[in-house]
Image 1 (cartoon, one colour):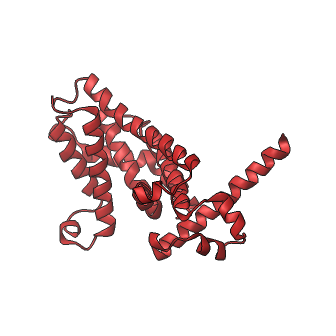
Image 2 (cartoon, one colour; image 1 turned 30 degrees about the vertical axis):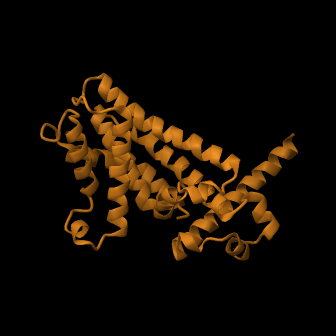
Image 3 (tube, rainbow, N blue to C red; image 1 turned 90 degrees about the vertical axis):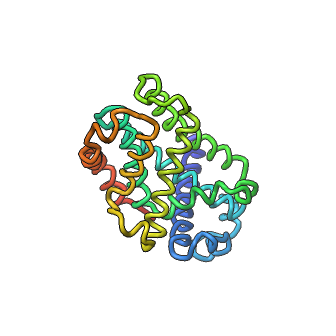
Length: 244
């Protein structure tokens, strides 16, 4: 039993090593450059060993997605421990997402690529199950945030549902961060303060939902600074240990 456990640990360590290498290839050459042949040529393992870990390049991309979402969850879990009101905790989750996107830019972008049907259809069932489980965990964090605000009467808008709010929240956050990083030279982006661009968009969205206290009633710039301090140890740890 112990021998099997050691073998599995060795296998998992090797897979993490291969995922590190895949991230490096994508970071240097773009997501379309990743192939299992390239992964084989740049690793110390045979083609057979690579295929024992990944059934296709799409399966490998999905493995990167699993790592990304799992890591994002650790950021979110730390964020919700911020000592503040419900809206400040929501703000902390956005700050954590921004932090993740800056420390792990390649994995941040890969998540969306792995969601396309062409990738999912060629991903192993086991990996799809892993992705779905992790995605549900992320959704639970977002849904719970809005459920609590609605239950406490802090969101004063009859047209807001948990499902629509969660999607709008993610779409705004991902879109803002993606444009801020990929289209930084566009005038619409470059003319804005990059340190508060996400905060401003979050406030516009949550004010539109009627989530009190509104930004006209609360100093969320101060909240943003306190959140940064709260998450600083997490940022330091991941920056020092990043493979991205």
